[in-house]
Image (cartoon, rainbow, N blue to C red; front, side, top):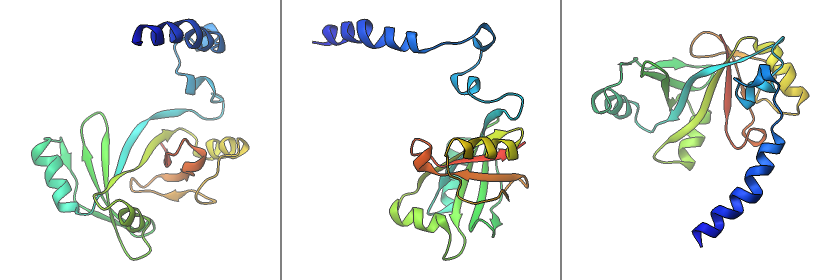
Length: 176
């Protein structure tokens, strides 16, 4: 049965995928995402951080510092505009942002009511021109959670993209 399934995949799906990919020689070393971004206006950068909502910031910080031996774990910082406390866990190549609710109107409070143990809340991706990125994204009918950028935890402009328009993922774009 498994070998029949493999044959079906190899004979039908695989050729269709290959036929649907049309890259120029300049695009050969780029990811499929990069080939769809207008390079003259804005570019995607790296993943800046993965944000995780946690019910206990102290316990979570201890876990990453003492169990997983993260490079560093910052002190909690209140982000009143966003309704959260943030703590950054640095792994050298990327960071995890631990989020704890700040106030009754915190979006993280609502998230934790649905996910008692916490969980991944969003992914932050760097962009080199956030205003052009927003224009382009809105032209593609992707909604943002606010009309304008706000200053994020790193002191840079950020905006969140609606998860229903982004494969179920809440994406934060951050200006670098």
